[in-house]
Length: 212
View (cartoon, one colour):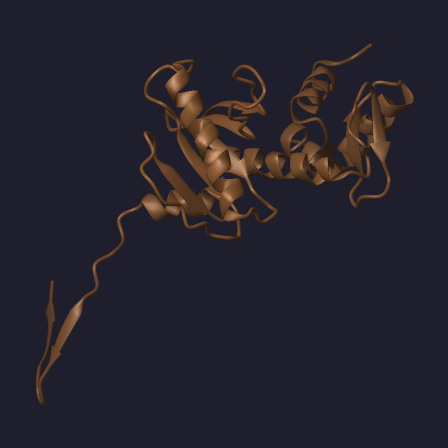
């Protein structure tokens, strides 16, 4: 019989498509004395019961729902694990509301964000961009967000678009929503904080005076 924790783990596996062992330990066993050991025992039991499957090609192991369409050695695994990392990061930052993985907003061809989340009561579409797009590919992606904006599907205010990538894109043109770029959500949050003003020093031969 499934325990409450079992059901919560399985629910998260459905939501994130796959999860590595350490993430399961952090999210569902963090309050225990030995989170990793406890996660190993529970996931082994769930695997033996046919509730989950596992890939041994990753370290630590990566678990999947019993019914999964993801290729266990495919690039999609890394993509979904990157989305999971963003979720864990947001949990640590606090004040996280809704978190949806690859939500759908209509027919194919409309914007398909990796994440929709509410952080500090503000909506964000997040693109977890770990491969480098051409400028045209990025422009096409943003144009699909414009189509979504014009469709009226999303209630106002329209979410901000946050691109998480190591590469910075030259984004030109006027968009009806705000676009941000950062390496991580933490870096993005830090960029919003007021920066300390530099202190100018006037130096004479005998006296140092701080201004400001």
